[in-house]
Image (cartoon, rainbow, N blue to C red; front, side, top):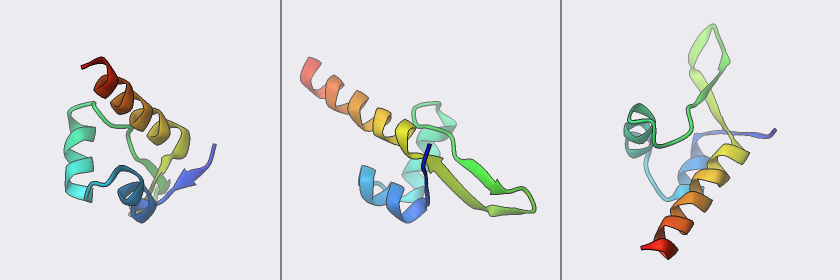
Amino acid sequence: MRLIRKPEVEAKVGMCERAIRDLERQGLFPKRILINPNNGRAVAWDEDEVDGYIEARKAARVAA
């Protein structure tokens, strides 16, 4: 598992943090991982989960 930080996630999925957060709240995007429990701003995402989200979006495009 490789953890990726916000700038890389935004670049990979082409969305801003607000859009990503909205999708997380709806259960449609992988949840962020708190890197440092003492600093709630230090977060990252599991790269495999983000890649899975991208693949699912591609599959949905093909199926439509």
